[in-house]
Figure 1: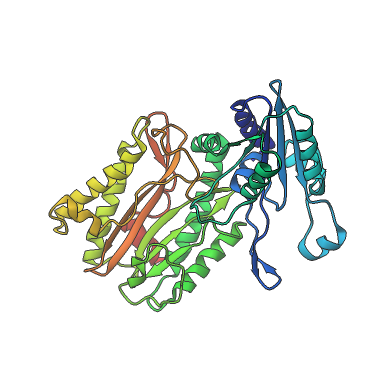
Figure 2: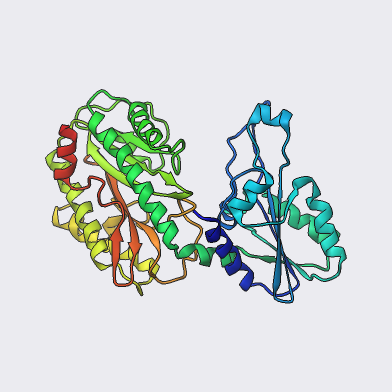
Length: 413
């Protein structure tokens, strides 16, 4: 994506802030894994959304006063010795080109720079990205910095920019939609590779190897999220990552996977019989999921309540399962549908958005129909990515084989 996209994201944020506000956003630090080894670094998605940069120990600082904003970014300086061990660091000019921020400093200068801002007496509040998924999560740099602020500058007001960033990330811009389409092409290649290679006796890790290889051929080194690939009874573990079981003849292969392109990710689920031919019961259940998915794509449009997407899918799927004799009342649906049917995607797989907004043009979320029938030993989900348009919606992942006929035909190859 162009630096203008990230600049626009920052400008939208700044427009919502009062004068005499300092914005501070951290990219994050590495987390220790074991001994002297760190976990692979993964930058704060909000930092990336605002700067286009995914490097560790960077800091964005923006000062808003008199309706003018002064932006600065603090980066790890070039270091020939460390770069010999851990790779080339971005230069100041590269940072300018990626982010559109002209004022670049060494990360070592951040604390003194911030201290001088506060000492100037021209600022009353500090705005931070204070996100936690659960209260028990470890503190991010923002929370550590917040504690320091309250101790050293108790007169400063601390504000949370997360609600505004949620609103901005809810509606995707044209470049984000384009990147999601490109990610779908790569995801399709990975899923089709698994389908074509499938046979009884394959291990789950072999399916994963087929998927990862296909992504790598398209320049995608790491998927959008840890791939869920399972067979048989493992399909009844919604987030399964073990990959050790061998598929037996007649098993359904469940895969919940996605590629990432230019920071935008897919989240797609397909299920197929490892032997390439759906059994009668597999056809019955798959048709229920497919009909429900098709119905949802026919009715989703701007103005719907976001919560009603999941509710409508459950009610429609109930009628499908009732028609084949599995459900007798709506209270039975929880026995077969174990999770929600819609979540937004984007810079995060479960994207950080404003879920109170009604369905609106520019949203991209999953239509995820999962059916888990333990008495038949069949569990799977059919998940596609829905782009809401001005008049309806578009299935961005419709080209990935999804009908019984399409799946069986490609598996013949």
